[in-house]
Image 1 (cartoon, rainbow, N blue to C red):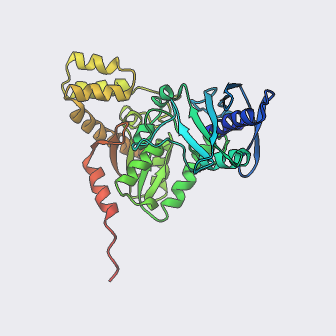
Image 2 (tube, rainbow, N blue to C red; image 1 turned 135 degrees about the vertical axis):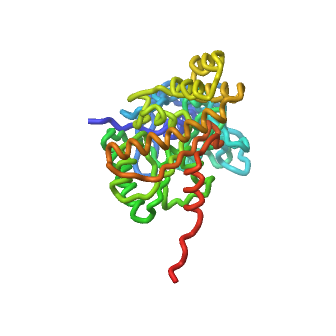
Image 3 (cartoon, rainbow, N blue to C red; image 1 turned 90 degrees about the horizontal axis):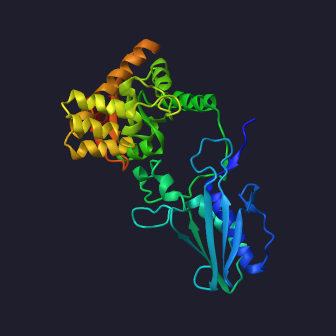
Length: 366
């Protein structure tokens, strides 16, 4: 049976709670801490605990997301907590190294995480004191480079976000069934669908002011959901995704999980060849450590616009062929590609037409 775990905010709160208790009670025997998850309680092991000064301590936990594929597994979460004379607020949360920031510089500690901090720390803080809790993720900045955080405004690290403390693993089949069910409900109200790859795709779709009633999140299951859309009577699909994921369709890869197949750099280099790129450009693309770096190499050499324009067209063509082959259906399919920061870098003519159609309200019956 798959093992559940906990989300990153839970471990940050556990580290901070342990450090606060250590300062108040001078206790050295905190091997685990009970964290109030609002709806239930979690017992979180404390990896290390140390007093720094008479009024401050450091608590450390290790992230455990259960049997989910999660890049934060075993990541250390540090919480430095200091008690100071009472100010306006009893609890002040700060973002340290590795915790992401918004574009305005605000620490990426979101609503649910703040609720957990309040529920667990506020009852412990003496009435004449303010607790300052600084969350530090030593590996956060490095791990963030492997995410799409920048595309939806989280810079320089990971975020403490989520709507639940429980990290519930789902099998691949469970995920696909969820996406299929969502599509089946959505197509009943909108024959023009928007396929969003991940949260960053959703952010870009919202920025394009596409109707929420048309949006379907796909995960990695683009091929299966294209067929589902055709069989359920959709008229069109607008694909909206980060270029490093969505360009896989240009190479005939319709499950975009890197565990299934990955040929991003080869697909980019093949497109670069077809628009006349020189050998140094091809070498730079193939030697790039990521699709994002390859994109910037193409920008630097003046090939990005023709390469991604061609890829957007190729993605739509391949998607139509896939749907005809496996679903015996035909749909209008448009493609919108964006970079790591969510900036649109290419879209084909069909994508522009579909956006206009979705933004234009249908005529009232006479």
